[in-house]
Image (tube, rainbow, N blue to C red; front, side, top):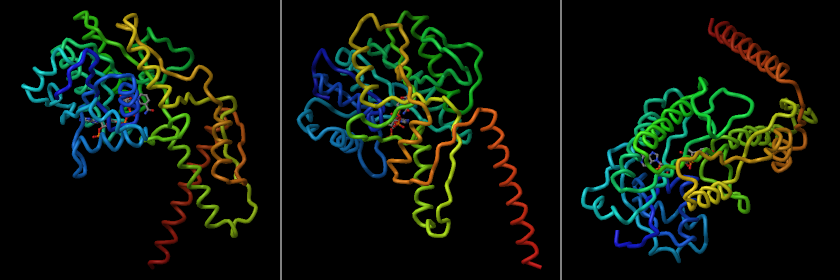
Length: 336
Ligand SMILES: NC(=O)c1ccc[n+]([C@@H]2O[C@H](COP(=O)([O-])OP(=O)(O)OC[C@H]3O[C@@H](n4cnc5c(N)ncnc54)[C@H](OP(=O)(O)O)[C@@H]3O)[C@@H](O)[C@H]2O)c1
């Protein structure tokens, strides 16, 4: 808390994926960073941030006196920061980067997601207002929900519906930031990344949602074939992929770089930015590369139409129902 500089920011989510890379980038650019972080698994917040930064850069230790940690929780008013510290922070941190969120898609976690994502955004606006700081808010391209086709940065509520708790709560959260920005003429920038993957040079990642769920699926197939390879001999496994479909992946360093550069420009204030890949890779290419990387020659990409994929998914579902029934009868007859 002893840091005094005109180039100071407060950043949430510094133990997470994007927040840690963005924090590192800000340090490299000469910023002083107040990380708002939690203690977890018996590790204090400072140690958690130090670990993250040193994983990202071997030179992290040279920035050690450029950052400090405020222990807090984004679900609390002013993130639970002590009053005296808040007063000291005023006039020091002139930007708040709000990266903290819960990325769970599960409806079981919806209440928690609402607390962290929606209440968290509300608390971020109040904190930025108290500090007289700009708010740089991390939204997501997926606030577009089930919309298809071209989706513009100036569009928000287009009557879309949402496929999961994450999309819904992030939409509600962005709405809070927009209302605050518009009603109070406050300074806010909204960033909407697509699907973020590891560093472009090292592959380092701290969050394994999105693309990594697909990679995990391929990995488990590869492991299965390593174990059972002899038994299933040369049986080829076709993976159906919708022809010409693409996944908008973007590397975490590109996201941190874009956010940093945009946050430096006064013209960015009040704007929304899609932080996405301009030429997203085709699914067939992503899957093919993943399979080759895993060293699994028997898998073949099978390009199909969307209708065909839906038909196959239905067939698989019916087959699993059938297997469930057979299993049930076998267990019952075995029991008798
Ligand atoms: N990853 C993506 O593909 C992606 C794509 C588009 C947009 N985004 C957005 O980018 C932002 C960052 O995502 P990410 O991938 O970096 O997420 P992440 O790796 O899951 O990190 C989430 C961060 O939020 C912190 N956090 C959660 N609840 C908190 C609370 N109550 N108090 C304090 N900190 C809390 C976590 O702290 P702990 O370590 O203590 O849990 C962690 O540092 C999010 O707003 C997300 O919606 C992400």
